[in-house]
View (cartoon, one colour):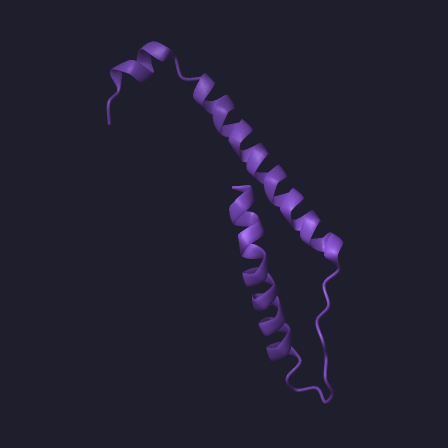
Length: 75
C-alpha cells in the first residue's frame, strides 16, 4: 500500500499540473506549479492513516460475526 502511494505521486502531481493549466488557460502569463517536498510526505502519511482507519473498521466489523456463523456460510 505504501509503495503504491509513493509510486502514484508523479501521477498525482501531473494531474494537478494539468488541472491548474486548464483552469488558468484564460489568464495571461506563465503560472508555474511548485509543490513543497514536505507535501509529498504529508500525502503519504494521510493515505496510510486513512488505510489504517478503514482496516481497523473492517476488523472491528469482522470480529462481530460469530465464528460458527462464519464457518457455516460459504459463498
